[in-house]
Length: 365
Image 1 (spheres, one colour):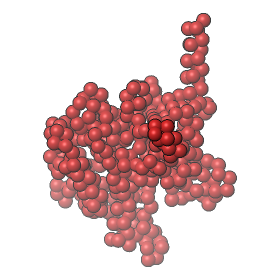
Image 2 (cartoon, one colour):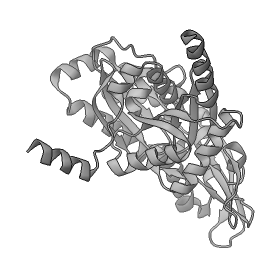
Image 3 (cartoon, rainbow, N blue to C red):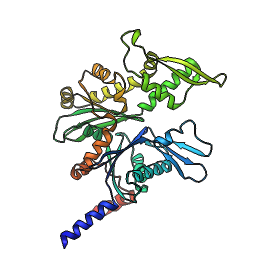
Image 4 (cartoon, rainbow, N blue to C red):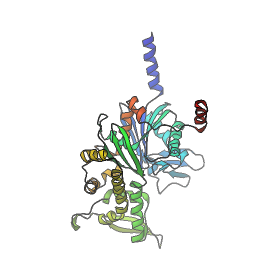
């Protein structure tokens, strides 16, 4: 009878709850479910009705409205720079995504969410609160650098130090990982979004033309490179259409890959400098390990033409690109979700409330 009751409880538990690992990114949100893999990969965008607050669309459907939203709708990218910029919009976006994953069933979830290494306690709390408002029964936050390393296939048993560079949309996370734990971690507010902004500013200053964020992202994907072409024949070109600053009318110009590389150079140099700084500040044994193990590159920035080669040349390290760089954080968080002991060790501890700390202090005294 006891065994039967236990089976019934497990079935009910699975029916009403579902564990999820989430990469809440500035550009894309990915959700991983055990035994199902990555079940959602959508742009982190939500369209909300201006007057009723109703969610009109999320993800790819809402992304279509970026720059061309109807007058009764507001389109939000609620996560910026790796942190929540609009709490209410983030909560609505998460609810919609999770409902889609659950097939519109009213389930509650244990969520493991990746956060930037340099995120503040306040930023971490906002992520926890948004997840709890999205019906999470338990929320564990993990460092995105550790999640990216595990998602790239790093073994739990590997005691050597590894350098992980995760170039996302809002932040670049640079971490040193050993024995499946963080040795050091930091995040830079320069990544994919900063590259898009750099392209928009370059075209504005050179061609006196304004382009939208979707156009800038397309230019980055088509022409973005972190190294110079080996000859004029290899310079790729594309037509870019925007709004002329002086007249306000449509204008078309042809932009080359060499120009886009020039626009991206300050952002790329800052990423390389951040990785170099992390190595310079590490302990001698860690530096020696990194020389042997090399650098693991993940995130959307790993797909930028020549990025791996540039890091390899400037840092004098062997660079390995993850098999699925875009999903590395979600996959790594999913591995931790399946191993409660590892998760307990890796989870970022929630800050102790002031009143609780005071009470403990009085009792101990």
